[in-house]
Length: 385
Ligand code: GAL
Image (cartoon, rainbow, N blue to C red; front, side, top):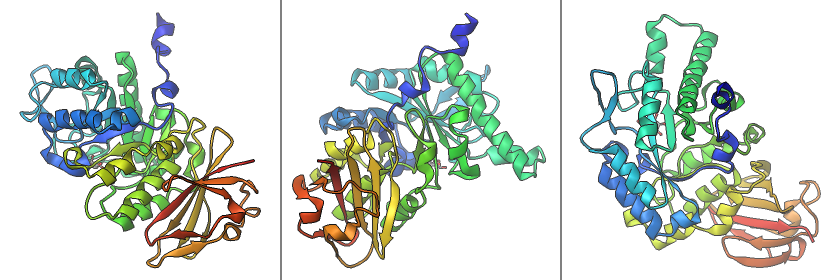
């Protein structure tokens, strides 16, 4: 019996063997999200083909929380009349339901957090049928402030302990619940996230629907790959593909960076108003296959030449994904020789496929020059011959 408790029937590695994929309410709906929005998102994940492409989790972000009753049990607010019924609906579509809370007494939106109720909340989530928890630091710093903890090391230790506490609470439910840490990358979380049971941990502050922000986040991910792999992933935040004024090139760039980074793919757009172009970008099977590659090896920045950045990632089938980003304002052109195949350690004589163009290019050395539009990307799959 004891053995069964300390070794749950599921393992973290199989729970998120590849980076989690789905949709989250925050980037589009923010604090306005309702039960009906979640149901419509679930419907659209199915209708758009996203579910079949791998987008399985439907995640409710902040502002679902209501009050606790006399026994301390959390209830949803009036926007979410019946969480169990909502979970049943989402499950009936072949999808999974995620929820959000904080280790502090209040969430970032000033709703009820889990502080002092961790076990109780985990049990409630499990009883509702929740499959994923995003646990957002928010007011936990107030807890440390009021306890008079000023020492930075002590604060880091307390924060880690708070995340471990919810990890234990989730395990104790016996229900497999993906555990997502959100504390903006503080305290080099990539070094200890998996030790507190996280399947993913945010490595940055919040994303926004602006190209510059997306690129800045991507650039700060290089080198973090050694901490990620099957079961535990770096999370550079949810996707903004299809939001704001992002152009076709910028949406492709965003999706490509995230796929190269083995990042969780949590779409954040309004699925009921998705253009065909955005749907095609989000559901490109070959790009998703790179993100979900079983090796789980994140890309690194190979080299940069002015505004052109080249990232590469080894794949399970022996191939290499090579992404050439142009973050400048003018188009860029590259010949095979500009890739410095040998110095870069790329397979020489490999055959290249242009993934977004869905076109075989032949041997990289012989191919026509690649043209990368401003803010665009060329994503190649190299296969050694
Ligand atoms: C932020 C978090 C966002 C979103 C928001 C909700 O701290 O980074 O992703 O969850 O809180 O209030």
